[in-house]
Amino acid sequence: MVQLAAGDEPTTLTLTTWFDAYGAGTLQGRLLDVEDVDGCQAGLVAAGVECSDLGDEPWGRYFTCKDVDGNGLVVAKTARRANAQA
Image (tube, rainbow, N blue to C red):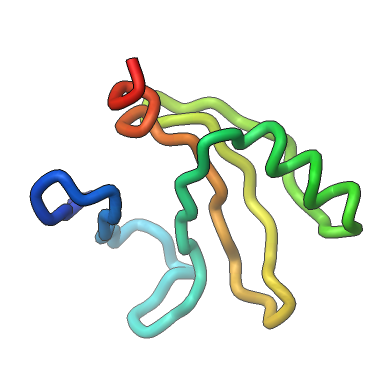
């Protein structure tokens, strides 16, 4: 995995090779970094969006869901965002 960022900008691009479902040109696996991942998941579920349970990894707290076009999304509060606020 390689994560790229430009200076202090909050936007990053992560490149991976181990997910077969995320082939070249796919729109699967987009990560949206949010302030309140728990609240975001609760709001989406209340709006009828099917979401995974919340999970915790060394890189952050997250859940997954699909947008209206079927693209897989990872919604997270990453460790980078959490550390920047500390």
